[in-house]
Amino acid sequence: MEKLIITVAPTGSIPQKKDTPHVPVTVEEIVTCALRCEDEGASIVHIHIRDEDENPSDDPRIFHEIVNRIRERSNLIVQVSTGGRAGTDLESRIQRLKMRPEMASLTTGSVNFPNSAYVNPPDLIEALAEEMHRLEIKPEMEIFDLSMINNAVTLADRKLANRPLHFNFVMGLRGAMPAKIEHLVHLSSGIPAESTWTVSGIAAAQLAMGIHAVLMGGHVRVGLEDNIFYKKGELATNERLVERIVRLSKELGREVATPDEARKILGLVPNKNDKKNG
Image (cartoon, rainbow, N blue to C red; front, side, top):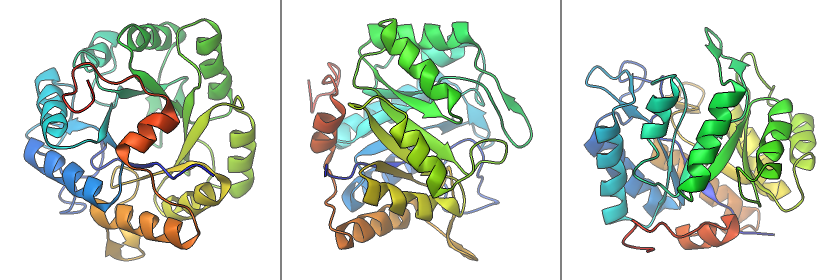
């Protein structure tokens, strides 16, 4: 079985300091957290940014500063979010790709969030995929329901994404896929055989889905973007969430991938702007 790739999503678009003091929201907090999570065993950091009021931001200057500072000080794979909470239009989302991260998220369909609709029309998906392909950025296909797998495979068939594809199954979000083992088995068996996959369990589902993925040969995303609790009534830190999945994976007999081992598993093209890999 391949070594386990751990992605940490430290910030997201929703948790604020009033919810948990541990969520990193400033440039310095996000960079410092990423470095500490690398020390604990994370290989990929999934980046969202905030403005001075802790609201989601699409400011390309902040993205550039965070990405560049992480590159200078670590070997982490940087994965930039192209999600729509910070800015829904195509130009806003393409701007985040211009610093050429090694990976970026790509949601291949629309879904209902608890209080809003996350709309990703076909032309926007195709334009983002085309730009990622042009810049040699590997998309992580964000899958909120089964139909999005077919949409991702269609992008590859049209030469807008390179195989092997990498999927992230987001499970346990109200309005989308329930976090149940039978659903994870169905999803993981429905992707092309050469593909890799990660699971992002939301809230209390993060730990259970992560353990299932470890045992099934998938990979795991943890972090305060998806879950602010370590256990019921106890707030988590990103570092503790990474440390726990590392420890449990090793106890279950599966070693954890370094960033360079993760690059090999994912078939990443070395980032030409990354001093450590270019």
